[in-house]
Each structure stands twice: as structure tokens, then as C-alpha cells.
Length: 91
Figure (tube, rainbow, N blue to C red):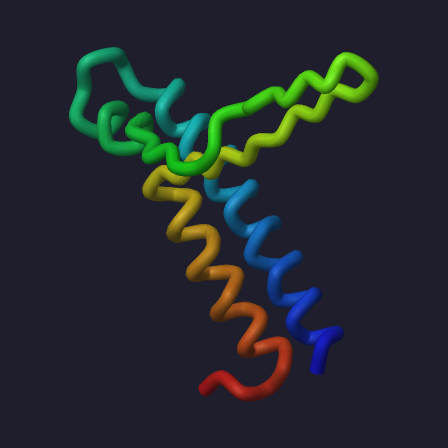
């Protein structure tokens, strides 16, 4: 069961990366100021900005940001569907 969860997370991450790449490609393919470019160029960012804790001997930097656009979400949904088909539970 844990193998499936790790594989599912990996598939979702790859789907998000491919979707994000596709979104950037589409954004650059259309002229500036167009509706299509605005739709695919809009990103939603959430997370923790990099924060540094300096202890003079050790310095820790922690941060994590998630940036999603329309195609990244679509990529995750398609990846989840393909994962279900791969497991044989989808119809």
C-alpha cells in the first residue's frame, strides 16, 4: 500500500511539472495582453517564504512554495486519472 502512495505522489508531481511547463509554453506562444496568455500565465502561490535562523554556528533556511496554474492543475488531474487506469481501478 505504501508503494502505491509514493508512486501516486510521484505521478502527481510529474503531472504538475508537465502541466506547468505546458502552461508556460502556451503563455509564451500567445501575444501579450491577450485573454489566453492571461489565463495560462496566472499563477497562484502559497507557502512559506524562505526563512533563515542564524545561530552563529549553524544557519538554517527553511521554505516551501507551491505555484499552481491552470495547466498544472489539469496535469495533476490527468496524472491521477492515468494512475487509476494503471492500477486497473478506473473505468
